[in-house]
Image (cartoon, rainbow, N blue to C red):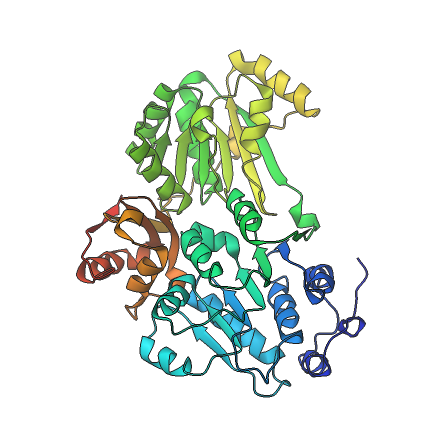
Length: 460
């Protein structure tokens, strides 16, 4: 796409002044594709990576129609964390610099309510906040959204990851049906489509295409003797050191046997197969999707419906009996423009399966020599995060925002250190960075959520 100047758009003069002062000469691809629709007042769902210029896009859209003489809340931007809310607010303020008397308010958890209540005595033009705190103000009737013209869900996929679906829907119910609703997301999970169907009207669907969006999978096959499978798998993991690996086995028995082997080598692995109770399955998925375990061993049936973003590697401990299944397996890596790795082990007796894969994908299978696999000295692969189990869930009126607020109330814990939040009816799981794990558990155990004490413990 040819570069397009902002002056090609019908923008209010003050905005063009701010854009020129910020030296934004030309629109980024996401801005060029979204702004014409935004300025026409259309609902929009856009998939674009962080750093693509999406914040400026929706900021320009909402500021262009803002009436600074009307002291009512005309725009609401929801973000998953306080840190992102502050970044978004800073960008909007920069772009609003030439428009006089604009009042923007940040409403996030982890901050005292007092100053926020004082600021809300006069309705702000723009609110940028996290779902939990915004909902709290709505419940207190200190925030009014009945004049909202523009609603933005920024990093909508991350908000869904963190368990904010119910909070978001309650907030949206307080806004006018006539509003413009904008969803911006780095990835496109099923939950985004569901929210879009529920809250948008004929949205324009924009996916910002780039070379990075084409699946980039490095695929490699290693021939091994049957008794060498585990040894070579360990070498593959040590050589590539993937942050997260999905290891496929063909049977439940093989999953359990491999789990024991990897645990004996001090690797944090989990297994997923049909013999698990629903509670156990939920717990395994919460840990793995929250990056609290580096390796998930699974059968094809158990892995159905598994939606894990940023999966660094798929490893076929055994080749699938069906070449189409093989393609589905390796397609789970290299999503959302990330580079992926697919490694498959096979024995001499499985060469027929290898040939079927080659015929199906229409290309020769790259065969590697195990001699290239180098194991670093004192190799360790620790997960980035650890998951906290909490014995309270939706039926206890526990929301993701409550958990996030309870943790960030501790000044030594930031929203950026908290990962995926998964809520069930009676339990909840929160992924946190390893460095604050004990502090996070102590913070939850010593404090109260919804005025109640809940038990919290680390899952190892």
